[in-house]
Image 1 (tube, rainbow, N blue to C red):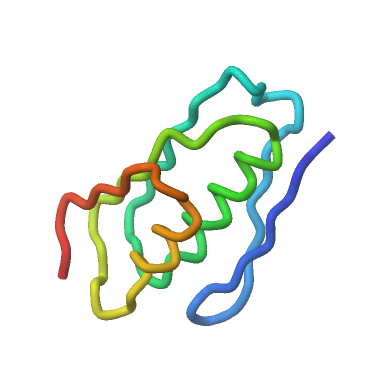
Image 2: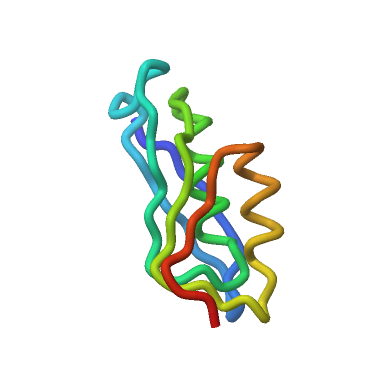
Length: 89
């Protein structure tokens, strides 16, 4: 079985997927993304991890585009889990 999560991009929509049996309630998952823009991809990842029954340990991105305010959206989704960025522009 596959779980899917749709999300909005700056220029359209996309989906991410995970096998339903790959995550368990004992799993703690860290979301790692290359760029945090509007927060859609990382927020969808957080939602998908929780739907699969696992816990979200936090999120980290290599580069954050601060002018797009994706941090606010992702912070809400993380619900207190940490969010780190290597570089913010």
